[in-house]
Length: 447
Image 1 (tube, rainbow, N blue to C red):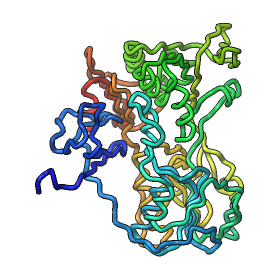
Image 2: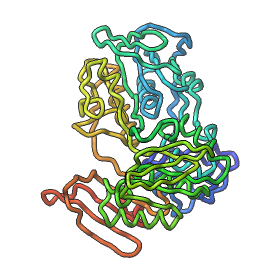
Image 3: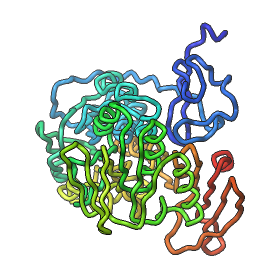
Image 4: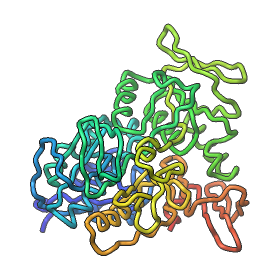
């Protein structure tokens, strides 16, 4: 079939979940709308995580013909999913692929619109707004999947003995409960919430995007972790004056060895990002000219148009505490089944803790959803096999890829180094537990 009559296809990045749509192309990377996947140059990189086209696969949404459920509030027992982020929708989709009739209710504190959260840290420089980031509205998704959506609804508590979920719109009786509540930004006391933007969800990001759309501004980003570094590059590429603040000497000091951290600092500096480390913020004050003044413990003060907090994530323990669930920096789940410490309650995504470690990565979510779908439908067990995902820093100026999760206190060994590339490893008992590749060829050599 010729291209002029062939339907437009979509391709999924296996690394980060980005979808390349042939109809839309990728104009920022020089791919005009209508560029077929096979016509993309082999050295083209995913605009989100930087892998090449060999890491993409044909994406076909499963055709699910579900029994339409009433849009009115129903208290009939069924599977209840809390949270309409990537994890919540993944769970709903996995359930529907296996059973098109079981009643499913999705409870969401927001509108429930579907969007790809990792795109938030690279969207400003690409000129995207909220409408462009929404892949499907919550209303359209529930109609397609035949589920009930309770949008703008907050969970008040859970009573496992009664299989009851209490919300601001009333109580629901569930047969199985799936928690996909995500994690929220950590905001230290010295960072007033009314003076600091956070970008952990589409609504907060949208407010910040509208503020920055007024023109080039001076922006302080507090926290030089992965999100802070990615957003710093995104903002400076969009024409803003960016200062990255952290208590450490160089960015991502908690994850990267010093050699790699310094390379990242030099790369960001080359783009125009100012890095200020070795100091802590003592407070932020709003000035009469609408700027924000940041005070440091050293006595220094700086003024900015906008302040963004990228100081990490934390899982809210309120729901877990009310339900009597085991909790340790996240909802503790069984590593094989993802069941919590209470029967018939499961959890996935950013809110969980597996074997003592929070699991805040996109890559495992679809596998977690598949395991939970089999469990809540009482089908043959689909054992979840957790492994450390590949960590990719979405900084186009300097690709950074890490396989495995490094351990604090274990020395890094230099494998290779030149002006363009750095490769290091951590070894424990003669086994490689983490490998780090930094530089222009990092993505191509990550496998």
